[in-house]
Length: 300
Ligand SMILES: [Zn+2]
Image (cartoon, rainbow, N blue to C red; front, side):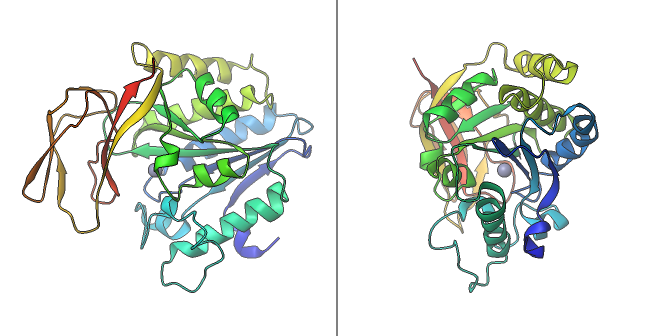
């Protein structure tokens, strides 16, 4: 294995290559809860995991940005999974190194060109207060997996976000999922991401579904999601260009009900009103980010 690829590996468990489960933390460098969740799970998992069940790869994403605890240095690593950047090491964008090392690590050393038995779980947090949800890739098995968490999941969003690792691996035929665990750098987010990992390991039969960690994790996710819509669809994406001055109005959080024409944000000298009635998703309360907010609707 190329030594630069190894820098992305936190740990590898198991020897049965029938199933390969890839868990990635820190594709956004300020989202350290994903790495924390992995580090907290590993010592427990090592005692309870039967290596004959499959292989589990724990990886970390944007290495230079993680060092600085920033979302990215030059470019969002989770918007670069596109043909024009894969295999391109000539640009000044520092993230291309992590992109190409991760892509090669997964293709050559983990999946070895075969994707139907590979699963990709991408751990995230966000700047808004509260709300935990999943975003599946646009394929049927990812949708079924998203359903299984018991938290709200957003259908048809991955196709609207070009260049995500989620859609890149989904298109290759993997079961591919983003799990958004809560607010950046809060202890709750780490707990929620741990719950998502334990649930996933049991869902793919890598650990026993009766383990206390799995049962507690599933109860935790269920508890957080009570009274929230379960299956949602993207209705609107408020995309930002590089030099726009965007300021979300205070008080928005994930799944807050929104009325059509409600004033949601200030942008340059304009007031941004909601084009739809629905629920708020990922309102931007941090400086870096390419989307101001999303509006989602419950799928009937
Ligand atoms: Zn993120």
